[in-house]
Amino acid sequence: MATVPSVSYSITVRLEVPAGGKAVSLLTHAVENAGGIVTALDVTNAGHEKLRIDVTCAARDTDHAQAIVDGLGAIEGVVIHKVSDRTFLMHLGGKIEMQSKVPLRNRDELSMAYTPGVARVSMAIARNPEDARRLTIKRNSVAVVTDGSAVLGLGNIGPAAALPVMEGKAALFKRFAGIDAWPLCLDTQDVDEIVTIVRAIAPGFGGINLEDISAPRCFEVERRLRELLDIPVFHDDQHGTAIVVLAALTNALRVVRKELADVRIALAGAGAAGTAVLRLLLAAGARHVVVCDYLGAVHLGRDDLDDSLRWIAEHTNAEGYSGDLRGAVKGADVFIGVSAPGILTGDDIATMAPDSVVFALANPEPEVSPDDAREHAAVVATGRSDYPNQINNVLAFPGVFRGLLDAQADGVTQDMLLAAARALAAVVTGEELGPNYIVPSVFHPDVANAVAAAVRESAGGKVRGFTEA
Image (cartoon, rainbow, N blue to C red):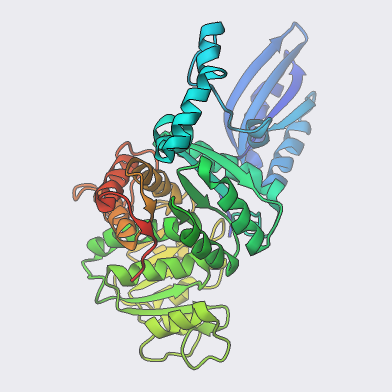
């Protein structure tokens, strides 16, 4: 799928040009002729004979960025000095840091923040462990835990390569909900070891956010930790995705004037995200769902069903459809994809029911081209930021954890997830709602507060474990 230039592939080219002549005016033309977009052009050093200029531009990918550099270098008199990838520059030294909330300017302040004064606080917590939430960072801290086995769409790239993503997640927690989140990238993919490690570090945190752990191990890790810990365990790839999908679908169905209980839904993907989306859809009232994995529709007649797939087969596909995804999409009102790129075409979307809804959420390349889907569907959403209706987990997890921490909840319930989805959907007002605006922007000021308030109200005090329909 062809993409447009993006700030994700933004580069700054430091070059030198003759002070006279046409070289300067040719710089922008060279970038545009290569298909890039100039976002800034700054003269950093000027002389009588030479000018040093920084040209910042957006490209489609790394190969395209190189083509832009080659185009600039081909201009007569231009000398390329340095090319900087702005995304890598942002990550230099990491994206987060720890800061003290209290001043340490003199001996008195040091004596209260640390020894000997801190000993009194420690003894108070030893006498009453619940005081840890009041007197330590536990009340506002979340551990972002991964084993690096399913990072974004990159696959099993390991814990070190996962760290930039987990840092980003921690930065989002802070930016959107004021939560201090700490990346914990574990150098093990053994379920028993992951559970043991997380259980051991849990006393220092108010919640656990599991991230980018591959299925089906993620189900076992989450289940066991929920049973062992007295703080909420939330798997964002499952529950965060499910919340935003349900919120978006709620509003999309308002646009096309259909009811969740009546529509036929074809769901591509039976892994962690797909299963969680399905569970929340069913809890919200969906009744006609067919789930497909890479082998086709999930049904009770298949002989390869593990526990997760068997649950899906038992709760969906009442008619026993056994064909492929294309057949499941035919006549469906809704398609939701959390699977693989390019598995459907615009012609497939054309076979759906009138006023259809398409959520093609594989990222960065969706299950079907959004442009092709728009020719036939009434509402289209993706996981991408360069199309309307971006289904992004950051709409959910900061507010969910803000609510959980504020309520001092010790678990998560299905009702909380439903409440979060309803609150997120309600941020989009009736006057704003339309085919290209079914979910609010991640920068909408009401998102995190609305979701947090709904979760706090649903918690109604402390809860234990995770209950599902």
